[in-house]
Length: 456
Image (cartoon, rainbow, N blue to C red; front, side, top):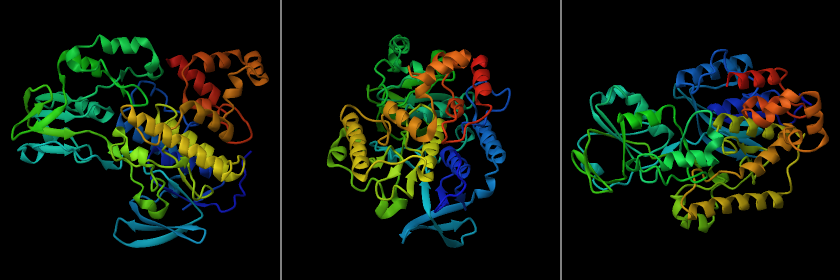
């Protein structure tokens, strides 16, 4: 049921990435005022992966289709957030340099994972005579044409950069210490399957992929032909970086490598500094700080990775949930759940219960950090979170995949859809299939889901 009479409905979303745009749409459709799953990719765009230009085109068409562009304030930086009475006051700095203050009833923070590039700490870095970039300062491959390039770090960004250098750089190396699972597109759920583990075990031992960390210690890479680049020798995996000299680097295996350019792709850290005294990571447990895998990163204390424990009725985050390998789905489902809570269709537990849940998440992250690392300190228990969101947002998926009457009814009335849900690809359209009286369903969700599965 959609209610258009929302109390305290003036809302600000800080950040206009995928999670931010989805939050604007999902909160707008239930009646909130602002100062993805129900919108398909264009026909013919079934080949994956989507390139950056295609993703941008999709997001622009998404915003146009749902008529939310007028709610965006572009070229505007939020420089500070203050709590005044029961309002959130945002200090905004425009592109032209002028500054203003606006007040909102509620605030959703969607500033993303990729805020602060991690600083490299390698002996001799200041002696290197070549060019040094990080993933924010490196803009285009023209800067390294004909050069010998060393990329430090093995993750999605590192492999994207390597692919972009093919045919441009003279030599391409990727230095890593712990390896990474490399998955083919469309097979993300196979991460737990022995076949993929076997694939890494049979890889060239010199690549160092055999002992790749598993989830949730490190996110896998979606390959897009990356293995082919390794097999062809176009990209070479080398051990970790030990020391940097004027024109070469020393690796942990003692070998030297002549390079002209070093690109550090060693990850990012979140920052909650914008929230000041309401920073959800301000009271991190000492056990987290002492854990080897914490690496000085902030650990937020939130309910279900979304709700502030200080002001759960007016301060939330919509990009912390890692229930799937898709950031698009995660941000979309989180903001759908958030909308139903703030709308009043679903209730939060007591303050004490929310605190216990947040502490449990913090302990899970700390335990992982003590066992070798955690890819995101804010990660949630995927199964537990999915069950919670299904009920709170009103997805209606779980009841149709179990043994209750809704599952039997779907199996009897629509066996094709039932089989698709059980055996097909778990795509975003699933979250808009059923009407449970909460988040709005999408009338074309079934057709779109079946078509996408038929395309393979």
